[in-house]
Amino acid sequence: MIPTVLLCYHSRPMSAGLFFRDGFRQAGCRVLVAGPSTPRVYGKPDGTEHEFPAEDFEAPTIELPNSGVDVRQVVEQAERMGHAIDLVTMVDQYDDFWLSGSAPPGTAFAYVCVENFGPLYVERLNASRPDKPYYMIAHAEAVPFPRADFSWLPFGFDPFIHPLLPTVARTKAAVQIGTAYEPRPTVWNYLRAKFDDAPPCSQGEYLSGLAESASTLFGRTPSYRDMAVACNQAFTALSSSNCDFSPMRTCEAYAMGSVLVSDDVPTIRAVLGPPLSEGGFWVAHDRTPEGHYRAVCQGVEAHSDIIDRGIAHVYRRHTYKHRAERILADLGIQGACRMIAGA
Image 1 (tube, rainbow, N blue to C red):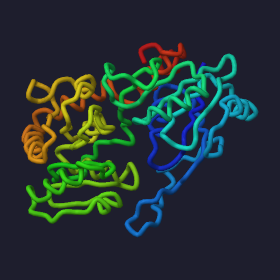
Image 2 (image 1 turned 135 degrees about the horizontal axis):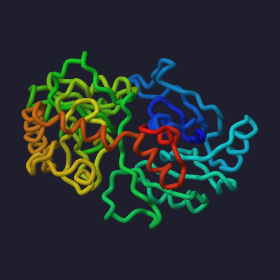
Image 3 (image 1 turned 30 degrees about the horizontal axis):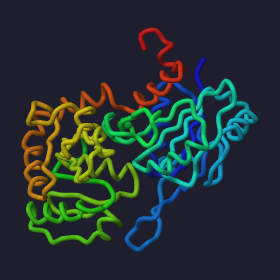
């Protein structure tokens, strides 16, 4: 029997829910999407919205308000549509939409908390009773979670959302896609000057679009498709977080052919193994602007020697299909593709 997963998240073009949607489908599940939807996002420099082609956005099967909703009501609504739900998975992205309560008997309930918003998640999970809560941020398991019953679920990648694009020329030394909080603007202005003698950008410019110099790309892209094109242009994907957890792009970088350059933190080692200096395939920096520059240069120089190892590693262990299978296994649900001999 093919299990049916009711996947609940805020549907929008840049959403972690998309990863789990594809992951559960790749794991052999039938997936219904429930939640509020926003087919456009703000972000153009003039303050208007980005428009997206239809293939970049999937409207939910069950439209829900952008607020707290009782999980039983959502399951009952799906059942009235003729669907027998085996698993409800809530992907909470620090949004106004979340699920409260417990699932009806016979339906498993997993709750995935994305990013580092612990106090909010504790408050919500105290009003919710999932069978299994996960904390999806790449903290090392030794780092205390906001609740003792959290299980660590590292970020992964989706082969379709984060593809290797052979037709895109790899000409940039480094790329970083993400929010322009400090020290990132300082680091990237240093790199722009060091590599290309390019003038600095303001934080606002980095926040509203993708700033480019001859050797660097940094800022925000309006869709995952644009992000994939940007990352396929670079030899390295740089994280300048100055914090003790690894970036969301940890595995995505290798899927798109870039060597990760990052803080040397326990969780990067837990996901990717040791850095280049210890025989691995990623490069650690020392958190100074000059340290970032030296590490990027190391990554560019070593790219051809180590990138294939990194790509093979993340495909073996870190797709969102692997994450979906982890949830299914924890809750005793068999994905259809594993019922086929030899699959």
